[in-house]
Length: 321
Image (tube, rainbow, N blue to C red; front, side, top):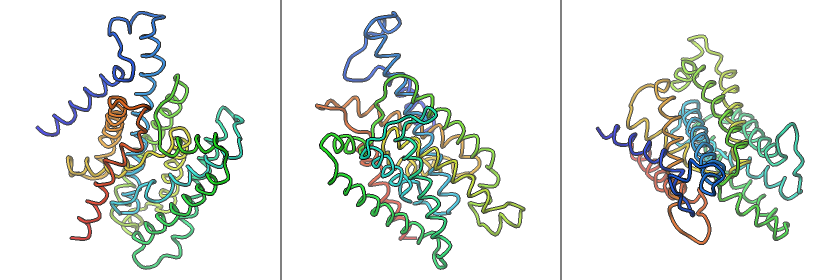
């Protein structure tokens, strides 16, 4: 019963989300073309809901992917420093004032993607030197990289102009505020690609979530599958972060909620995790628009307020076992 209530609640929020915001919309005027309500609804609110849904899908699926591959409930692109690497890459592009488009992608997106991919390769390289408590040490490496990237970003803040620093500050707090359909469609395509990739390797992922040795005995090339999935996930995260900025803890919270609601195998939780992640982020974004402040509350603050206590709970619960 509680499962059904949660899903119904999230779906109701998803459907009603486009009608919440700083400007109240008349339901009848939304369907009349060329009206202000119609323009706001179709050019701002609907694209934003679509963007939030697929952003949540990418974050939640990436969290499930990292937790399964590394067999650690605290592993996400956020805690491993991959999101921080993407932020630093985007910050470098902002500092250098590189805005040229390459094949339809902005330089900020390319630099953000490069930062995420570099971090993945660096983690995989450093993991070769870890012998004892491999996954716990990898988590510490990710935290160390995040601190290093944050320090590098602070240097960019220190050297940047007022305008650049304002852009960086707003970027690092995360935002789902977009105009038009270009970015939502890009993220939706990437989100679908990520989902199809994870679903295609669902049986391999199930074996990897148990042990690399067991996967190898079943004929799975653990290194190749891990590399492919991490590469695709990092591409999705890098592209998303370069557009929205860092949105933390969705990849940590959602897979655990789904695991509690549906204590089944990893391969059976992929679809539920993806949909729940999308609906959950839409709910968080709706909350930022309901709360009336002088300016819109950054989405990164809301997810951190929810995810921070949850992260502490996970650490305490793991240490007590």
